[in-house]
Image (cartoon, rainbow, N blue to C red; front, top):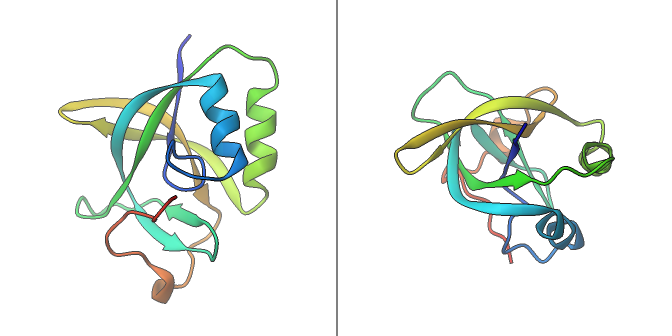
Length: 122
């Protein structure tokens, strides 16, 4: 069974974080994507919260994960207790699919919202 992950911050292919390189070595980049949600700045990394408003869009990428034992354990530890892994609908151009994403447990303060839906990586 193919597994996909929607990433929107430090795991994106352009991110300089070591975990981005770790993921890239174990997954195939499918391409740029969006998911319905709100993006927040949590300091050096972002957090996504689910939203029912179709105007709330988070920009990121989808990776197809390779079959590797322990991969989810490593990602779950990296994301930590402040996030939970849930399934979201990811849009890649005109195509839609289901992918895992890490979302915030609880809603961050509204003043930390990133209105553009895109966290700067580099």
